[in-house]
Amino acid sequence: MAVNLLLGLQWGDEGKGKIVDVLTKNYDIIARFQGGPNAGHTLIFDGNKHVLHTIPSGIFHENTKNVVGNGVVIDPVIFKKELENLDQHDVNYTDKLLISRKAHIILPTHRLLDAASETSKGKAKIGSTLKGIGPTYMDKTGRNGIRVGDLELDNWKEKYNALTAKHIKMLDFFDVQIEYNLEELEAEFCEGIDKLKTLEFIDSEEYLNNAIKEKKTILAEGAQGSLLDIDFGTYPYVTSSNTTAAGACTGLGIAPNRIGDVFGIFKAYTTRVGSGPFPTELFDEDGETMGRVGHEFGATTGRPRRCGWLDLVALKYAIQVNGVTQLMMMKADVLSGFSKIKVCTSYNYKGEEIAHLPYNIEPVNVSVNYTEFKGWKADLTKMTSKEELPENLMQYIEFIEKETGVPVKIVSVGPDRKQTILR
Ligand code: IMP
Image (cartoon, rainbow, N blue to C red; front, side, top):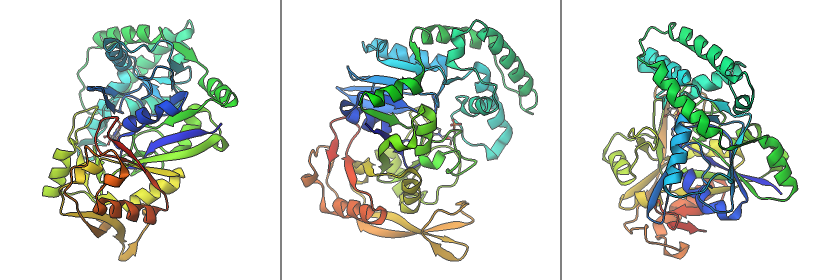
C-alpha cells in the first residue's frame, strides 16, 4: 500500500491541519515528518478550535495512530502543553500517539541560541518563530543532538549537561545580551521530559514499513510550506528542514517508491509570516482586506501575516519539486467580494519575461505580471456542493488547473471540517 503525502505549497499556513483532519477517516496512520513547534495546525469542529504544534492532526480520531517521525524536532515543554490541552478535551492519546526514538529534542538553550542569532542579525533577521528550530537542526546535522531514544539510556543527563554547557559558551559569541534563568527553564524542561516519557517510543521507520507490508493506509503530514524548504525555499528566509516531498522519505524512513498521491495544499491567495521576498505582496486595501477577512495572524506567534495575490510561478515550482498529483484550494471564501481577482502568471527578471522561479526573487530582481479575473459576491461559507460555487470562481479554479496541469480536488470555504467541498 502506498503512502500518501500532504504538504503546503506556499510559505506555510495553507490549512494543512484542517485537510489532514478531513482526510484522516481514510487512513490508519498519520505521520508528521519534519518541523516542530514552529508549526501551528488549526482544526475546528463541533464548535471547538484546537491548535496543534507537534502532534499530528489525526489525533482527534478514535482509531487512528499518530506518529511523530524522526525528522521532527520536539520541545518537551510545548509538547506537554499540547498534551494537557488534549486532556482538557478528554482526548485519549496514550495508545494513539507514538514517538520516534530518532526525533531530536529541543533544549531550552536551543531557544536561547535562536533568540541570540535573530537579535544579532538586526534588520537581516529571518523572522524565526524563536522556537529553537534552527539551532536544534544545526546540532542534528553537526552530530551533537539529543534524541528521544537517548532518554532511555542511563547517560542522557550527562549528554544534556555537556550540550547545554556548550550552548552557554556559544551564547557569549553573540554581541547581544539574552536574559534567561536557566534553573527555571530546566525545571519546566524536566517536567516536559517526564510527560514525554509517559508516551510510547518506537523505531518509527520499522513501524511504518511494517504497516505498509500489512497494507495499512498512511498519510504523511508536512509542516510549513515548500517555499520555506531549506534547499528549495527563499533561502536564507526559510526554516531548517526539508518541507518538500523528499523530506517525508528522510523524515519517516519511507522509500520514494512507496509514495503514492501527493496532496498539495494552497490558499486561493498567498500569505507569508516573517521576513523574505514575496513578489505578489500587497501593501494596499486589497492586502488589508485579505488579512482582515482571512484572520491572517500566525497560529504559533500571533504575528500578522503579509498578504498578496496567488503566485502561479511559485505554485508551479512547488508542484514540480513535490510531484503533486492533487491540489486542494483553501480559503476561497476570503476572496468573495473582491471586484477583480489577480493571479501572477509570469515574472520580469533581468529584462526578460519568465515563467519559472529564478535563483533570487528579491524585489530588485523581480517584478510580476498578472492575469485578471472577475470576482464574485456570493458568500461561499454555507455552500456544500460544487454545483453551488459561483461561475467566476470556477473560471479561476479551471485556469489554475490548466496552468498547473493538476486537478483541484478540494475547495475549502471556511475553517470548519464541514466547510469542505469535494470536486
Ligand atoms: P523558524 O522555522 O521558526 O526558524 O522560522 C523560519 C521562517 O519560517 C520564519 O519566516 C517563520 O515565520 C517561518 N515559519 C516557520 N514555521 C512556520 C509555519 O508553520 N507557518 C508559517 N511560517 C513559518
